[in-house]
Length: 263
Ligand code: SAH
Image 1 (cartoon, rainbow, N blue to C red):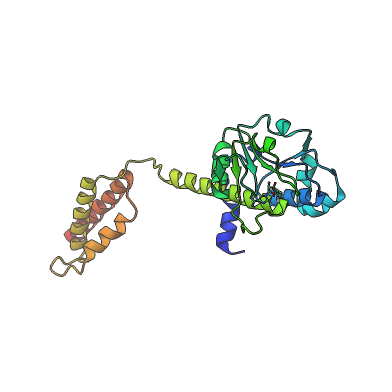
Image 2 (image 1 turned 90 degrees about the horizontal axis):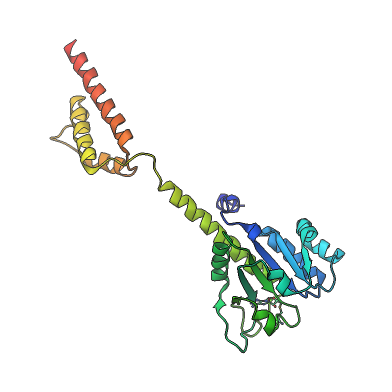
């Protein structure tokens, strides 16, 4: 794994994955349930809900789940989609086809963003249909939005577990973006006031005096020294406390060389 990939995989996730459930409706092949559980765990999701699965529990599902068997053990089995989404504030149904009644549509990326944002304070359900016929109209109408993976129009129907993977991957990416954003915001906080323009100008004047005094800087032959030092200090946005420390150092240097010259 590249160091960048390792960093991305270990970055803190600031969304509440326990608030997001993946709901599989009437799945006929238990292998798909296992593969969906694996995809979920790979992407950091944990809550699997099965509406009337044809065969569950199942050894085939366990085999396909690999190290995600814990998700199968904790999976909730319910009798209806209504029961699965009863506690959810946002419900998004995955559908390969546009249906007769137009419904608010999302692409996978905006589905990820919407879900992760809502999952801070709400339970969210992402609903997937049967392998042969998908979700029926009544089920789709229980959803606030539909998400469609923009697949090849000549063959747009993904394997159920592959569709779960695409949607869960977008959830993870949205969660990581949120964590990055929070980290960026937190570096904006600083416990001290930044030094003002006036304080900084006094500092540069003081610095220049000291550099002349120690024969490091010749104003007759400046060689862009002060510009380079300005660029150096400008890169770090010095705060007032740091500025006072630097001014104190300059003053002490001046005293020290004054004392030395007197000796
Ligand atoms: N033959 C079915 C598709 C079944 S695939 C149909 O035409 O509706 C099983 C489930 O995977 C679908 O119900 C849907 O939830 C999901 N799925 C498959 N392909 C998808 C796509 N392109 N976009 C969104 N969801 C998809």
